Image 1 (cartoon, rainbow, N blue to C red):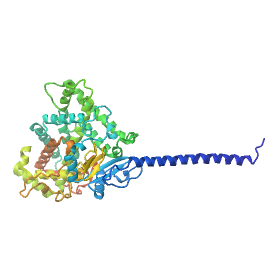
Image 2: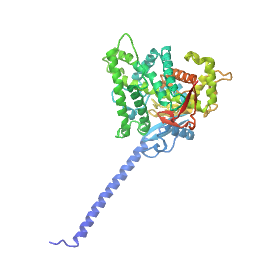
Image 3: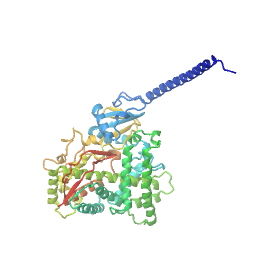
Image 4: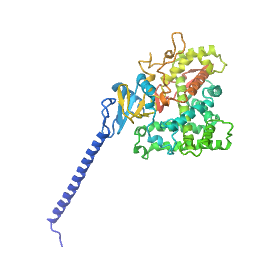
Length: 515
C-alpha cells in the first residue's frame, strides 16, 4: 500500500516538536544547574569579614587563576602587593589565598604570631610522591607531634654529625679542594660552572646522610643529582596543580604524574642505601643520618603512631638532599656571576683574602670575623640572589590579625621573602648589588634585621648553620685560587632568573684564571 503524501509531513512535524521539547528541557535544566553552580560559587567564596585582605575581582569557578603567572608566581604576587598592599588576597577556584609582603608584615606573622602560621596546607601534588601514613618528611609536613619530633631529631642529628662543628668544616674544606681542582683542570678556558658546583655541594649532604662522598663521575651520584633537579623542575612546571589545593584536579592523568615516577626512581636508590646500612650497622657507632634514624626506629618499635618509620626516613633523606643541594649551589653560582660582573668587588675580596689567608692557608670559619668585606659580599650575594622568593605556603590555624586585616582560619598564606630582601624601607640600594649594605662606617660587618634568606618562624631552614659554612668556605676557597672573568668573545652573563621552586641564574660561561 502506498503511503499518503500528507502523512509524511505530519510525521516530520511531530518528530520536530518532540525534539524541540526535549532540547527546551535540556536548556532549562542547563540554565538551572548553571544558576545553582553560580549560587554555590558565591556562597563558597563569600568574604568572612569586612577586614578581609583586599584583592582583584574574581571570576566564577576559576577565581583569579588567569592573573597568576604560574611559571613565575613570585612576580605575580609582587604585582598584587604593589596594587593592593602588603596584605592582599586572591582566589584559585574556591580557595582563598593571602600574600604577605614586606619586612614589617612578615616579621609580625612569622615572629610575633609564628604559632598561627606553623601549619602546612594539604597539597595533592606533593602527595603524589608518597601515600604512606605517617610519611610527610619535614619540608611540607603538617604542624603536629610528628613534625616536631622529626625537626628536633634532624637538627640534633645533623649537629652531632658536624653541622656547625669542625668535623664537617674539614669535610667542606676538603670538598672545596676537589672543586678547585676541577676548575683548575679547565686551564683558564671557558666553561659552565653549574654542574661542578652542584656536585660539590651535593656531596656535603651525601656525606651527612649516606656517610660517604662520591667521585664526581660516580653513576649513582649522577643519578641522585639528576633526579633531584628533574623533580624540582617538574614541580615548577606543574604549579597549577600545586595551587589547586585539596582538589581532585591534581590527580587527573597528565605530565605532572612524571613526578611520581621520578620520586620512585630516587626512592629506589635511597632504599638501597638504607638496606645496606641495616646489614652493616654497628649500634655502638653511628656513621651518618641513616644509622641514627634506624636506631630511633628500634627504640619505638611497635608504636604504630610514631613518625620513625622507613617510609619517612626515605622521604626525609630526599628533603635533605633537595633542600641541601639546590639552595647553596644556586647561591654560589650567583656569586660567581656577580664576581665577573663586578670586577671591582672581586678585586677587594682578593685583597682581603691575600691579607688574611695568603695563597696557601685553607679558610676556616674562625677566619670569617677577620674578613668583614668577604663576609659582606657573601651576604649581599644571598640578598640579591633571592633564591627562595616564596616561602613554602602555610595555612592559618585560626582567625588571625596581620597588618590590620583579619585572615580567616584555614586560609593558605604565602610569604614573599623576596619583598623582605628588597624592601625599600630597609635597604639603601635594594635593587643593586651593594656589599656596603652589610658594612658599617668603619668597614666592619653588621647584621641586618631584614636579612631573611632562610625564612623565619617555626619552619625556618634547619640547615642554616651548614649553609652559612658551605657558602663561606666554598666561595672563599674559589676566590683564593682564581680570578674569574667573562670569556673572550662571550656576552656578559644574562641576569635572568630561572624559577624552579628555587631561583637559579641562566646558564653562563666563565674563565677561572689560577692565581
